[in-house]
Length: 406
Image 1 (cartoon, rainbow, N blue to C red):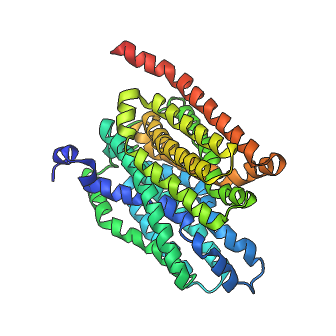
Image 2 (cartoon, one colour):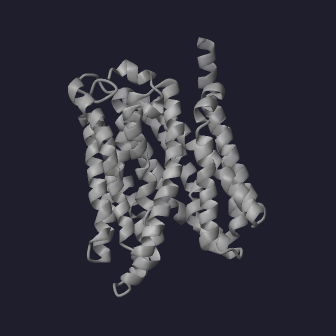
Image 3 (cartoon, rainbow, N blue to C red):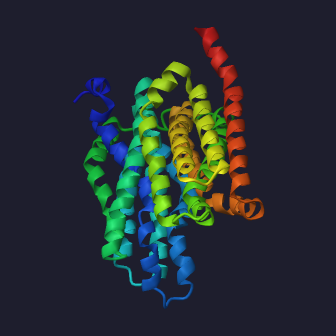
């Protein structure tokens, strides 16, 4: 099928888009899938030294290696092509992810989780770069919204399936990591296109075009990365701290957390479908600002009163806002990235996202212990208001210049 006919097909019918959407869901699969099995895993390895700490570290371990490897993966994607990196990452993801089902001890499972982070770094970096290579304009915006929807819905699916399997055996949830093999037939078409063109998707490789001077792309990319890290760090208050907030306020933390995060994901999945329409009609800066404002409102609502109605409304608002912000800063990253540097910029953004997850408990837990959840949630709400204003101010000169050109 010709590239032209592919461009005129709905985004959800594009073979490459289907493969990249499936790949995007690995981000949420990597960390959260084994969460339901943690208590039973800890019990089964109770005789090993430090079992209580090691089992809890299994969830976040992949994020550490993503932070370290993603920048290198970005350079590799620019030099050797996105397709080979993506396929290698998928195969490594399946091998390392499923290893927990049969490895003999907790330490070896932990090592497999660190290797899983390498796979995530390869796949996420190549995936973001390929989105920039294969889609532009309204099709890229449509893909970004659809991607956020897919991540939210698949997050519910993966955690639900893992929860069922964990009830049968604490090792069975690791088998969920075999599912990405289903994406390989779709991704092979991308690899074949790179091989036939003799260059990475999206343009000439660094042998055919001079690399852009660092000053032209590195500073904007680092600014987008910083914005991403701060955003994810604050947003991660939900999955990392919500159970403790609910437990401190007399809720059944297990069921209430599942309902709260489920509400967040469902609202996020729905609102993400509006990203294309909003970004095209209002502009990317305004869309980001709206997303930050919704997240600010959600955390303010949580801070007001610990009740079921406030929990559901607050979590829903946070999920809806993040559904606009996440595709927004990914779109912004692709806008500042020259074609020959898309892999490097994708590596920066991937590192920034997982860095935000890693540092969130370390940065925010001391404030919660010192001031309590309500004050931290109000402070987070104020931070998102400031981020909304900062995005509008930073992007205003660019918006005005584009209007003058028109």
